[in-house]
Image 1 (tube, rainbow, N blue to C red):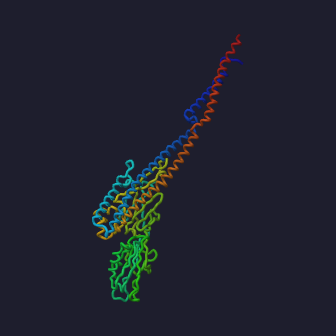
Image 2: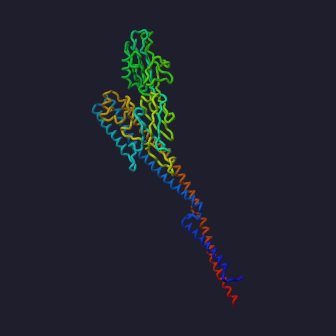
Length: 518
């Protein structure tokens, strides 16, 4: 049938031409943008997942930048700490030189003191001025904040890391289980059969040995125990051993102790000569066997069943629980290192030697250096590290004479200046303070280095891998395949050209009706 009102072939050709035109426009759009998905209708599901991946990529990309910034902060901090270490080493060399009092003049010692003063001032200056983009690094701004700390129980607290996941305050409970002890040997003051107690019945030569060295001292017959105590204490800086009358009474005897607490301290007292009288065997020292101990509030009693003969005794580290977990003990110090809490506490001598005292609880209320290392702002993708202040007033906290003394005490006019050390003939406290300060800075540098290497660098490598994989995944979903699109473009062009020709033929077919009209 031939009709002129409705040209069906033309309509079909138009519809096909429109479709090929849309296909051609689609291919041109993809080739011009390089994207397979330019709007939601192109692939709704693909658009959703690709946009989510794009969000992940942005988060990971920023996390990588955060890690790089954190590494820069750590590197800047460590550079400042390296300078402090150099200054501490120079102070130590000056103290060692000044201790050579037989070969150094007063003028030279005063010059050394001036250098020590300036070095200590420089340490404090570096601590107060080390910055990164306006962020103070070593003045304590990045240290943790605490509440409820008292020196009657905890002399010093170094908090290295704390996790505030699900809380804004961390309670730290300290419970001493077993007291810290010095190595101790006991000598009875009772001389059976003699008219006098608390004196030597014959000449005695003692070899006194401690962690600092050994000395051999001879005492003549009839020497009072009080004189023995004085002689031992005069040599305590050489041996690390001190002495005292038991319960303050010569008739009770003498106790020989290591000057420090802990398993690294010991006392050894041996008689190296033979008694003038073979019957004189009263010089026999004893120790408390096993885990027996005497706290500061309990007087010594010779009827104690744990006494055994001995010439050597080691000290004992304090044992304590921190939040119910057994902490590592080292003398009067306890420490714990867990993913949620890492700290070191120097306990007060009385508190560490008396387990009957009540638990101590203090709070960590905030602070620390918080680093966002993951693409999502959650506590699980953040890490905290504390950077303690390194001024002279904070470094070198050592328990000396019952008080904690710091690096600042080495300055002119302070209790551990070179003149004060020379007057008392003992430079040992200065050495202990400096060595402790060097250890503290070295440990801090080590912690920062471990944090940078084991946390920041590994996290950065992981994020880089995630960034690569996410980018590749999004590219597969979103980016156009130019080889395929070029082929489809050629096909669409051919269809468009053919459709145009077919439409022209369809439009011309209606004119053939005129031939029927003559």
